Length: 456
Image (cartoon, rainbow, N blue to C red; front, side, top):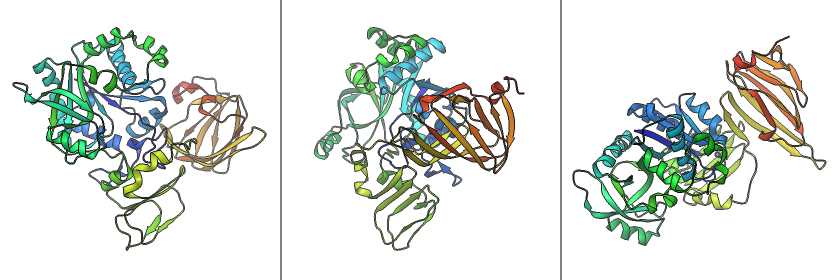
């Protein structure tokens, strides 16, 4: 069995810590067994290793999250990268094309798909292992896992099973699906033994390849990449699962939680305060998460979340925190903090002048032994001021060493890179007409490849 973990999301519900590149699964607000900060994706990846599933797991993601995944998981996780975001059906179809065409897996290989961020214990993954046997025992085309509800929640979709269990297995045939009912409808569904749809399902590779061929979707990986923009943006549930007659579900009666909003996330945080600030002792059920260096003081507040990041400041009652997505729906701005494979950066200031000139100031950290890509820009110049640490830099194939106080000027069209000898921090001031990622022309990524250029 192969696992495909879907890593997507635009990061609205946990603003301001989450954004387009740092969705909720990357927020390091949880703790591992040793009390060390841990994100949801790190937690799930650790659990996969502990349950023996790690070697067969892939991450399906989009380009904007690749750097963050590598930063948090290193190079361990095999990635299947969408050229652009197009919802879960195109993402899973791309993964199927990769496994069929690139990996050359047999068509009877069972593929299990799950979200990258369930908050569960390891029993959840032990149950996932059973889906392969369920497919063989029932000969169904799809095997789903459904969570036994604890309350009549309006937040989840429901899977309504038939009354008879299939002989020799825990699986039950699926009758129909009900998407996000109101509380009264949810109570009725629970009386019918309905299950929460937790986004876990399994199928044989050959099944989805046939579905793709029937829809005229390429099954060769490179052709799929070239035509990816033509695929309809639609979920796998709507496009495949809810249309499939041969579909069974396996109940999971264990711990499962969706940490998709501030009120649910803070319930599982080991500390009520992260970052600089003061929360007075008369505060009750109040959490402060502060990513800035300035102190935040919270006095006498009950049942609240105060979240502070370079992207903004949120102050909300916990029960009202799910409204953040609708409140922020009309506000769009560039991410002000990102983690990369080489370190991280924080935007300090951004100004757009009337004469179409933009100035963007970043504080950048590159970890020892890491390097940014060898790159150039056509629409901006940069000035680097080294704040701490020692690094090698390359400017137009020439190698230099820099230390605190050194200033490096990088005009438009200049090839450049930096490799940290020790952890190095520098202030980067970009100036130009269009300060966007698309203006980065990457010549090569690895320092060993950069060194193939002639140093003079």
